[in-house]
Structures are given as C-alpha cells and as structure tokens.
Image (cartoon, rainbow, N blue to C red):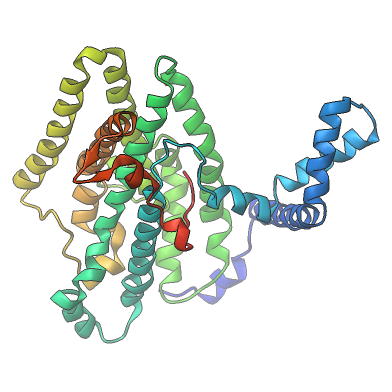
Length: 368
C-alpha cells in the first residue's frame, strides 16, 4: 500500500528526528577531525604524553594534549587499529579471529542474497531454488550464528577464568548493559523518528512504518532484552533479537561459570551437567512442537520474517541456542587446561594450536 497525496504532504521528519541526524553529523565531524589529528600528530602526541608523564608539567601543552586525546578517541585510524589488532597475550587462542571472519562472511552472504529474493519477480523460480541441495550452502548459513554464540560463551568463560577469585557478577552485568544501551537507544530512535522519512514505495508503508509503530509500542522489550521471548508481538528492529537472545545466554553462562568458580571441586560436574542439559532442552522442545531443527525457508518467510512461525517459536529462543553457548564456555576450561599443561595431541603441541592465526594472511576481524 502506497501513501496517499494527503499523507505525503503530512510526512515531515519530527524535531527529535532532526536532532538525531544532527547528532550523527556531529559524530561524523568529530571522526573526520580526530582522524586528521591522529594522522598528522599521532607520533607527536605519543611523545608529548611521555614528556608530560616525565616532567608533570601543567602548562598549555597539557591542555593541547588533552584536546588531541579527546579528538583521537573518534579517530578512524586508532579505532580500526584497536578493532583489528590481535592480543600479545601468550595464552590467547588466536584462531578465534579466523572463526569470527568466516562466520561474518556467511552472515553477510545470507542477508545479501536471500533477503533480496523477497523483492524478485519470478517467485516460483526462487522458491524452487531455495530447496535445491546445490543452494544448501547459502540457506544453511542461518546456522552460522551458532559460531557467534559459541565464541560469546567461550570468551565470557575465558575472561572470568583470568579473573578467578575476583569475579563480581553485578559489575559484569552493569558493564555489559552500559556498553549495549547507547547502540540500542540510538537504533530505536532512528527506527521511530528518522527511518520512516527516508523513502517511500509499495512496501515502505507496511514494512518501515509498521516497524516504527512496533518500536513505539514495544521499545521496552529491547531495553530489557526480552524481545525474543514473545511470539505474538511485533519485533522492534528485528535484527536486535540477537542482542536479546545473547544477553539471556550471557546471564545463564555467567551464572554457570560463577557457580563453577565458587565450587572448584565440583567444577567438572557443574560444567558436564550444563553441557548435557543444554542439548536435551532444545531437543525436547523441537520434538514436542514438531518443528525442524533447521529452518526450511520459503519466499513467504523471507517477505514476512517477523511473522514466520519457525523464527518466532524456535529460531530466536535462548533455550534453543544454548548448546553452542554452553559448549563455548566448557571449551574455555578445556583450552585453559591444555595451555597450562602444554598437552601434546597427535604430535601437535597446544602451543602450535594457539599460535595458528589466519591474521598472518590478512584475515582480521573485530574483537568483542
């Protein structure tokens, strides 16, 4: 359904939407300025910081250094350097950079190719194409997200193992929420007050405006990380289901790891029981709901992703996604043991395993 002439005349971005755009422009300006300053004075700034630490001067140089530090916070160069660098920690498992890279390639490929089919003309052809075995490599990439859940569980347990004896559950949760909220709030504001006014068309009114109405009504689902738990409500920004599901698994994984650290003598039992239960629970749900474990998609599913029964009842649920997350947490303990003991497996030492890094051939990915 398209917009009527009267609706088009009344379509104007509200003031809060214009302020959002203004804020984005301000961030872009700061990024450009920060990048220029970083490129021109990066080495000089480091020397100035060292000099100020040595002399402890409180002069105009210190003020200039503070201004440069503020601007370089937004530098594209510095931030990309942080995102793409690998740790120099001897106990780092470097292969996770390759896993993240290959997984994100699969996710991008799926969203780029499959969701474009929803707007194709020859629907019958694409419907047949989706069910061909030769096309399975692409359609099965829906399961590659399990690699991210695995890495999330692995890295959570890995960090907490390093902080053994000093784990503060409340501060860990608060820190996680503080990191996520700016992104979530900015995305909700964009979906409600900016995005609907950036275009028009046959599906724009139903898809984009419908999404804005969902956010106006259910924005708090995203803030409480519970959007993936509901099946009969519209999703506010459908892709944010991942944050909700991952945060629920984060709380579950945090509780399991904290319990394992509190009772080290029962650690093996706790982790083994968690691993077994995490595989039994989704199997039981899949069996009794008579669902498939793999999403067998159709063109209707792609066009109406928020209404697809399999997506809402199975794909988004944290208890269906538990196996890779808990497996990742358990793997962190296994890897920690192997690294400390320098165990050799079939002639290959753990030292060789952890040093295997795709970044040597230019494959980098974002650090969490």
